[in-house]
Every structure is written in structure tokens, then in C-alpha cells.
Image 1 (cartoon, rainbow, N blue to C red):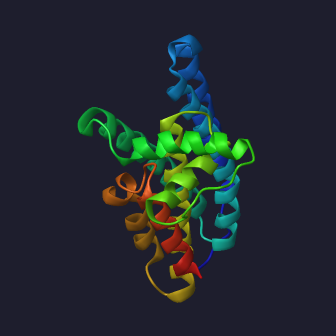
Image 2: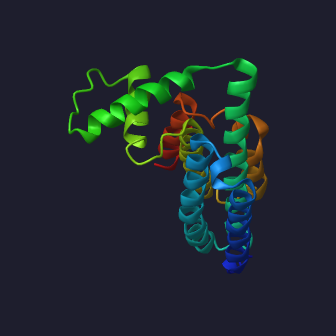
Length: 210
């Protein structure tokens, strides 16, 4: 049976997360944070403030207790996945495609701010560079911030997959599907970087929901 969702837990959870974030910044000291880290913290805080009300609304639409909390847990999983992906790129691989998307994205962001939208061909790798450019018109100049944003975009795609199965297969085991969808390590880790994978997951989710 469907029961009204109880989103009251989301407020305390989000509040605790923000308090932890503030305490972390305070303990490290703003002077001890790199520009990349500070930009990422700001981006995380903004994404959290957007995600909490989104989870509440979707929880009410779903009508099952716990769905909103599950979405918030999935959000944190994707943010952790983005940080791990970024760390692996830096410490293990020594660089990757995300470096190019970041560098070109900053250049294109400056171009957009000048009112110049002559990007040339908009396809393939160039499309992701342009998407990165538009992202960095609002993001701080932090590569980790870009990872967090693109991971969040993939998270939105996963939400659309979750909503799609409820429409196409209303009698399916939605909870088991959600747990696999949101918390499978492959999904948490790989589409969590500044790159094509996150965009692909988002668009596939949109197509599935459509």
C-alpha cells in the first residue's frame, strides 16, 4: 500500500550535512584551502540546496515513505563518487580527458562572457567542451567543482530512470531497482567526472523517461 512520504527527515539530514561542511571549512581555515577545494565546497553546498527540495517533491509524488531519503543518500553517493573519481584521475592516472575539458571550458567561458558564441562544430568531444564552457560561466574555476556538477547531472539522469520504471512497469520491484541503479559502484564511480559519461547517462535517462 502507498503511504504518504515523510520528508521531515530530509531537513535534519541536510542541516547536519551543511553544519559538517561549515565545520570542515572552519577547521581547515579558508587560508588553508586551495582555490579548487573552496570552489568545490561552494558548488557542493549549492547542489545540496537544490537537491533537498527536489527530493521532497519527488518523494511526495512517489507516495512511498523513504523515497525522498533514498534520493538524498544517492546524491551524497554521487558526490563521493565524483571526489573519488577526481582523486584517482590526479593520483593514479596523472591526468585524463577531464583536464582538456576543464582547460578548454575555462577558455570558452571567457568567450561566452564576452558575448562570443562562435564555437564551430558542435558535436562529439567539442560538444562536451562547449558544455563545460557554459558550466564554467557560473562555476568557480575549480576542476573538482566541474566533476561535482557533471556527477549531479548524471544523478538527474538516474532519477529519470527511476521515474521511468514506475511508469513502464508499475508492478516491478522498484526499491531493488533503485538500490542497484543509484548505488552500484560502477554507476557511482564512472559517470562522475567532467566528461562524456555523465552527459550520456543524463540523456539516456531523459530518453527513457520520455
